Image (cartoon, rainbow, N blue to C red; front, side, top):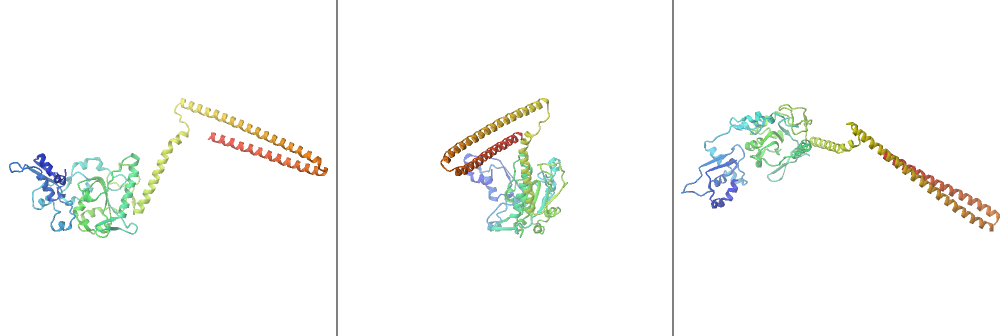
Length: 439
């Protein structure tokens, strides 16, 4: 349990008669003195003597102290000093660990100068994962210089709150590229977490992307304890995004930044590696592709995402293309079945063509019958007109007869044209149906 929870539940522990002889506190250098003292009083005394026999404090006074938000208490009463730090300052004997087993030895060099003779456990030299390079990255650690983004560096929307949109956008695009290229194809969940250095103390991760935010003044980042916490969280890869011209002039941080500045200040990627792991040994950079600024990595990520979408669409349509392709020659049985299928489709096509031809002939006969009926109607009309012409003069009857004959001829031509148009339309539909069946 935490010290805060123990302080809240102290009455319950006393009522239950909870007893213990040994007390172990982890991260005790980040606990207030009063919070360290309360867990020692969670049980009743026996015959006027405390039952507690041993108290073990585990911590690192080179890392961040307890968080005190009141600046007056922090500055004038030294309330941010933990009991662990007080014992070290007063010269109480303590055991100091002299080996680390978390990070690569090259990453450990960024902060081991702060400790006395800090070495490495055999594990980090024998495990295979520490001998392989980081997939997609040319270096295992690197300092990346981020220029102004859209003409602006750090900003302060409110007092004591700083932000840097350029570094945030840079890291966001890098995470998106890593997830899209090395996580999605293998259905790996992106284990990313956004937090602050203070909240991440005591934790670790394989890869750390660190944004230092400040571009005008170093400010509270000048505290070496904060730097040690930030540099010691990564196991395999550490990539620091900052304004190099600002932090390289900070005297307190020189031992770390001198090592970081030995490598290029532009992010070096290996675009040929698209898997979570690589066989490239540590120390071999491979084919380096340098990223100049935020816009550059934005174009790169968008291009690779579009390429990934195209590949996924090709994989989606691949089964459909294989279904329409030629049958594989795996055996005589498959070929016979395919030939039988082709023959059946051919017979079905011929039967369909015959049905379409029959329909066309029926439509043609019907159109001819309609034409004959229309001609008969025209003849009947002519007979009626001839009866009327008997009452008129011979010349007028002759002229009307000529006009009527011309009208009949025109109507017959129109009927024939309509019949031809209907026949041509049926021929086109027949041709289209044959073309679809062949496809």
